[in-house]
Length: 575
Image: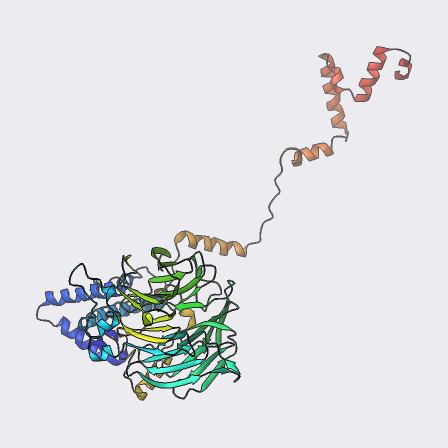
């Protein structure tokens, strides 16, 4: 019950629990102790979720105006709506922080007694004798060599396991009881074995989707019947599902990213990546932005409402082989064929630190507690706190079947210290202490839900479905008013005012000989009028008086005068 109150602060069915916990804290006999406990809970909540920005103003909630939009708006109705929105946001953060006091279950990691011991040297056979019987049962291997290699997929509550063999074998298991629920052997027109590239559960464990050789097919988990075929998704290589938006995304050999609404069956959008075939795709659980890894080492981030990538990062010098996002959405880990594993800060799009792998990395995954799993060759290594700080040695290390196999996929089981590994000889399940969250919300992810509860959860999820347009890098901007700076607003106003006026014809400026005055002087140079004749005679008389009469003679007159002065046989022709 404590976990229900802790995680379900936004659920309307738990208002009484939230109100009771809040009333008990504020009605404490010691008001100073009550305030201290509340502030400590808020700090703990901010530290755990790494979202101090979303808790802005929580400690000063007693102020008359808790809105972060302190600017005045002309529309009083819109201003009141924004203020109520911010007050609800702050109140929800405070209630979530207070409710997390009831989370008494804490996950434990392996601790050494002295500096000489190393946790990564501990094997699964040694670990099974130190854990309880139920946890020890989760250490097992399945030999499936006929249809290998296998991919591993867990549903959101972590109750069901989906195993898909590359050549057409599909198995759905109850991960808690280790019982087989449904098994399928898929073929292509009954002639040859199928080619399953990727798989995922949909809104719950009742349906799952497979990226097969030609199209995407949706199957029923109970009966194993084919429910639907998505003919628009041609030759898919990777698929992923957004549970809060009910969107199934796929990317294929042609390089097209496609979104389909599974509640209506309509295609939402289709984007051309222009980067060739893509087989690496994972979504950010915080903002539902899709991350794609391409063959030229570029990682792109996409939203269904934008035809161009939101962000483009040159991550590696070779093809990107795998990527993973943490639960808070602040960090992304990528692995490339250049043997590098890099940790990126999504908020600044810069590398935090990087690791070097001796073998080619095949898959990555991040647990709910921030443990990084790296599958390479025959080994799977687990790195504790490897995202925030660079570690010198791994937390744990596991060699699948004592070597001789190739790891294909690695996935953490939610809310359990269990890791599923798909490889070239089947499937292996191991125990890694501390990787699973110890508190879960039964209203959000209930692994013990019966048929009626699953139906109610499905209807509630469908009614709360988010629109595809709400997928963006910063989801906190939704519901606010964008305020531009004064200089930007002035430029927009001047541009709008100039649009109504007729454009003025610009004059062509000229210099030197092309001036208008020079052109007119050349045009009127040979035009003789009475005024010009008088002016020329006056200037000539003044020049003759000064002995410079030759300056106003024409070239013909100068030639005639020169011939008369020189004389000779031809002088008679100059008279």
